[in-house]
Structure formats: structure tokens, C-alpha cells
Length: 194
Image (cartoon, rainbow, N blue to C red; front, side, top):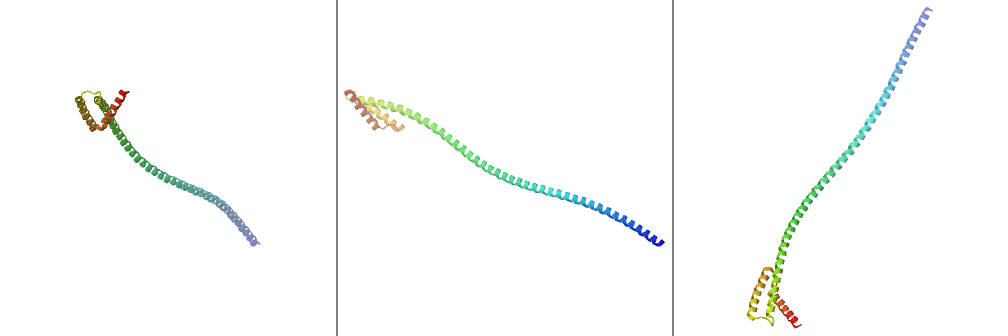
């Protein structure tokens, strides 16, 4: 009976030890479960953070691509503006040269016009003088005229003057002057007859 008692006591002790071991194992298991839950939470948190970082990287990459595309567009625009500016500068230089040439021609034409105007006034004066002389000649040749020698002298002088004017200034010819002289003479005769 003592042996049985000893055996039962040792069995009881073993059972108690085993219960303690089981409790220890349960505690370790609970702690392991808690750590596993924590690690799962931590893993989930890390996965969420990694997902956020990956999304941010994608957004930054897209933003970078958009910026690069904008930069390429700006480079193309700048190149086009530069070419256009060079074209306009060349055109402006050509226009400047053209205006300079036109201004130079205008100055030349202005000087030539003034010179021709002066020549025209001079020719007009000489023409009026010649017409006055022709008129005088016409009176000399009229039926009530003076002596023939005086008429011949005046006629020779008028002929020389008319030839000089026609040669120098492109004036009226002697034939025209004589025609006008004949016309003046007939006009004078008609006015006398009236």
C-alpha cells in the first residue's frame, strides 16, 4: 500500500508537473500567438507602407514623365521661336536695306526733280523771250513793217537764238517758231482788219 501511495504521489507529482508544463506551453503558445498577431499586424503595416511608397513612386514617375514631356515641348517651342526670330531678323535686315535704298533713290529723284524744275523754269523764260522776239519779227514782216535790212538782221538774230535754244534745252524748232510767227502775223492782220 505504501508503494501504491508512493506511486500515486509520484503520479500526482508528475501530473502536477505536466500541468505546469502544459500551462507553460499554453502561456508560450499565447505569447507566440500574440507575437504572431503583432508580426502579422506589423507585416500588414509594412505591406501597406510599401504599397503607399510604391504608389508614390508611380505617381512621381508619372509626374516626371509629364515634366519631361513638357520640357520636350518647351524645347521644341523655343527652337521654333528661335528659328522664327532668325527669319524675322533677316527679313527686318532686308527691309532696312530696302528702305535705305528707297530713301537714297528718293533723295536722288528729289535732286533730279529740282534740277529739272530749274531747267524747266529757265526754258520757260527763254521760250517766253523767244516768243517775244518772234512776235517782234512778225510785226517787222507785216505789210506796215519797217525797212527790209532791219527785218533781215532781226530775222537772223532770232534764227540763231532759236537754234541755240533747241540744241541746248530741247526747245522749239525753227519750223515751229516760223509757224507760230505766221499765225501771229495772220492774227494781227485779222485784228487790224476788224
